[in-house]
Image 1 (cartoon, rainbow, N blue to C red):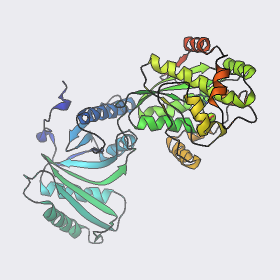
Image 2: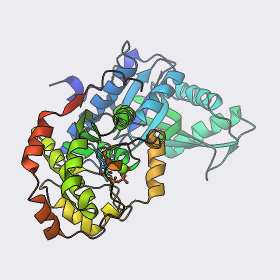
Image 3: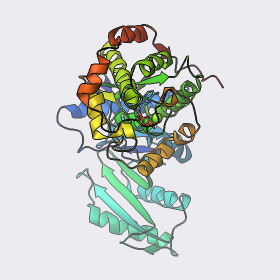
Image 4: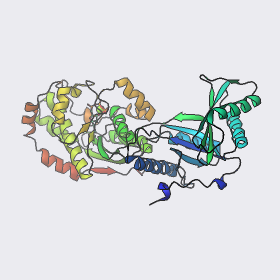
Amino acid sequence: MTSRNSKKRFPENLLPASGQAGVLVHYHEIGLKGRNRNSFIQQLQTNIERRLAALWPETPARARRLSGRLWLAAPTLDQARQVGRELAEVPGVVRVSIAMRLLQDLALVQDAALELMLNGAPFASFKVAARRANTDFPIHSMELNQVVGGWLAERLPDKKVQMRQPDVTLHLEMIEGAALVFTESYAGVGGLPVGSGGMVVALLSAGIDSPVAAWRLLRRGAEVIALHFSGRPETASTSEYLVRLIADQLRPYGGLQQLVVVAFGSYQRQIAAAVPPALRIICYRRLMLVVAEALARRHAAKALVTGESLGQVASQTLDNILVVNAVVSLPVFRPLIGHDKLEIIATAQKLGTFAISSQSAEDCCTLFMPRNPATHARLDEVERLWAQLPIDEWTRQMMAELEYVDLNQKAAVQ
Ligand code: ATP
Ligand code: MG
């Protein structure tokens, strides 16, 4: 058992009188139920420490529990800001605050509060929001508001104390063994810590949607194996290069375990030769899901993920989704099913995948595409055609030739 579980207090005598700068990481306790809670928090600690270790390997950071949140000490406030910006992107983090941790001494707290306010963004109005979690501290929160607020007002004569929507709120907390002071806070990405939700296989094209879909599962704590179908040998490998760049964009969120590529072009060619144009896309998609399911079973993943959105293109009607879905037994998650394209694009922009996906690449999707795909395929008709294709043999071949991309190697420039 690590010391992580112990409720040991911080060694107060190590706190200098001027306090310690750091990042206070808030997570949603409401989302963390019962016995899972501890393991969720431990997972978040691990993910945070890993992300920082990847960026600053020389100075390993420790994320310690502090009064229902996590605390990461930093040498200066500026460095705390840098760390905070990184941590806001870690799934499970709801908010980060750039704070000072101090001894529980009113004079020290007031000095730190003044310094924080003077060093932060310009403001005209402020208020103090005190909280006393540790009832041993003799002054209760209402009185703290008044005392500290009054002390600050005296030293900031040109600033207005304003209770409703002030420019700056000085948060002051008396927690067990220490005081926390902060004014600066940023929203985090939310969700749950990656690694807490099991493993999925996400079908990742170089398009706009599927990277967002994969990220939605990462954000809810799942680990993701990304599976890409390249048009090779019928097309160039441009889509593979773009997918690799997309994977690099998703990696900092943690949990992207693997990128696997299948050379799909020759199978598509064979489907195109055997299946009438209107039903080809359905058959390509079914074959993709069959391979994705085989990959999922190999890695004990328990679900598949696609970037489909209802009605967006011909292959994404309810009838067609039903016919495609019928070929696998694992659950297929479509986190974007109810999203509009503009919403998906906005998320893709935030993730930094949009610019990559906007570059055109010939992948297997653009290959052997019929002009008029069916919008209401019938299952019995597709099953009849399907039965004539050597699906098991193809699947065995593709599984034997899967290409596992080494994500630690830099992407080769194309
Ligand atoms: P995307 O923007 O994700 O490519 P799309 O709007 O182009 O989606 P389709 O081409 O119908 O829609 O693809 C639907 C889903 O099928 C994709 O979101 C993706 O999950 C999967 N998919 C399509 N093509 C590929 C591919 N080449 N490799 C892996 N998955 C794919
Ligand atoms: Mg696409």
